[in-house]
Length: 394
Image (spheres, rainbow, N blue to C red):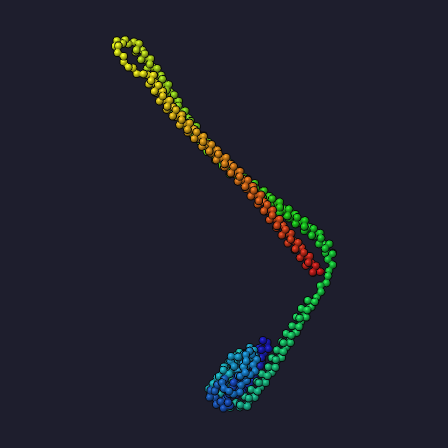
């Protein structure tokens, strides 16, 4: 790029300035078929088309990419990017018309601009051809410099390839020298023993921590189980206390009813005795003249009937109380059985929890053992890597 920019700035613009007095001055070597008469008459002939003298319009020399691209075509690159910027984009871009004699032509090339004044009668076609030959020589010089540059690049690439091959062969054929590692082994041995002691202490502490965690979890599970059992027993006791209160109230009511019935029976007996005494007194003080027998009421039978009725009522109440008491006893027995089953289920759950805790502890120990093995292996690998690195550094 430095070479190309030098070509564009040092060659093209200097040429345009040094030949500003010439009748024809342009920086593009396209197809140019301008005649001398055209230059002097100023009738507006264009610089870009025709089959006259040209340097690069066909498949001629070119410093850019592509066949047939020269310094004059607008679509081609001539001598890289630097040279195109210096010499313009071809005859197509310089198709300006000479409208009047003594007028000025200002046209832009591919990378720069220049102005040339065309004055009628200021030169001849011979001077234009001389300028053309000079520019052709300059282009030849540039071609030579480019060829030299490409040869240098190719030579440098060849040298680089040879150096790479030599370096690869030297790396492959290099023989590593052996070192005496016994002094370093003597220094490393106590460090290795300390490392093993530290690893053992670390493992012991980790096992102690894990055991403490498992013991805490076990105690927590036991506490929760005992707390649940206590709450269940307290609930059952509260229910039994309520049932006992109901039984006591019912028993008190039944006792009051029995006492009332006994008092009523005693009152009936007393009334019956008084009636019997009164009737006997009346019978003793009365003289019966009539011989006809009058049927009297059988008081004993009436009393027997009344007694039987009360006894039936008492028996009925007794049976009802007995049935109710039997049902309550059965209910209490059922509740006691349920409590027993609950306690058994809680005990079974506690046993299962202990089994799960033991299984968890076993799995945890297995995991810790695997982790310890992995850590031990990794530590040994690290120590070996450190030893190898230290050995290679020596």
